[in-house]
Length: 247
Image (cartoon, rainbow, N blue to C red; front, side, top):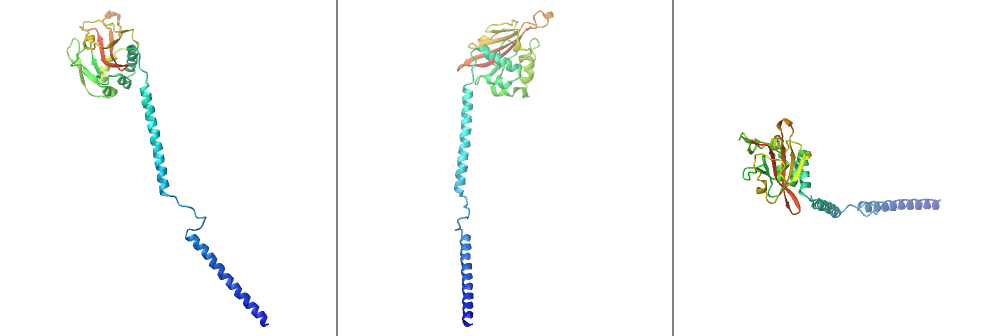
């Protein structure tokens, strides 16, 4: 009986001792997990790695932008130049017919601009000269210019560019003119044509209609002369001369 009690007491002691050791072991594992030594704990990202990634992305974007700019400059440089003044003039008169002032502006001489003369005689000091930048927005420009004087009346021609365009640039469909000539005058009136004196190095392309109403016996003829100068293998527009029968 005593032996049995002794064995029971020993077994109880071993059971209590074993439970105590198990709790201590589990507690140690929990502590290790809380201290961040567990192998299963996910790693945190390094801020330096994120900055490096952002820098690489920015560099890549800048490189792509530079490549686009280089390709754009290359395309502009390789833009075909017109071999003859007539080819260039045909592009310009078509642009006028379509009121494509951006296209017209691309032909305007970069330093001289383009001078507008309502009749055959070119007044160097008085005729309006516009730059390429002004030509781009000319149709919507409310500025009133004095372009010269009306033939016969002597009244000043005071108009916006859009109004002047309707009367002294594209008053007829010159893109489909009856006749076209290079350095040859087609329209003849009473006004002296001094284009050759004012533009001695230029080529003049004339778009001409001999008349519209038979009752006028040709006195209602119209001409548009585009004056071009060649520079650096490119033809530039330096003058737009309108002409018609005058008193």
